[in-house]
Length: 114
Image (tube, rainbow, N blue to C red; front, side, top):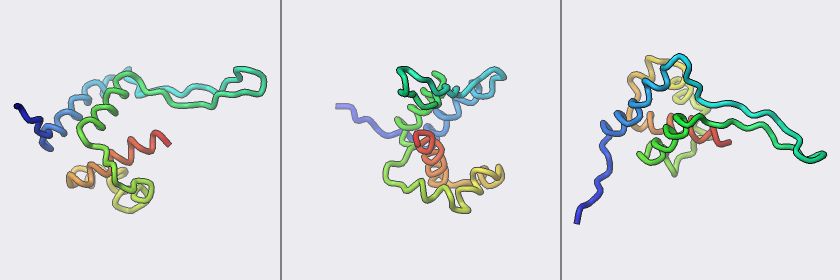
């Protein structure tokens, strides 16, 4: 019986990096905002963000590869100097540890849903 071995960190990084050529295309759009709409009188659909098909596959890949941490308090972490430094400073991001990358990706993806 063949066992499914989890992907290595290198494989996980390569899987996400494979999206880079798509994201760097000049006409690439990650998603779009819908407008608020009144369906029936006084019944509104609130605006929402809809991911493009490539962005949706990227998000699903991040979940499938285990980039999105389940037991991590990302709402609290995102306000730390560590989180803002990784988000805003490319030099800090370039030397991030694997754990920091997992935390950052989790935060970016999860906050999209809230």
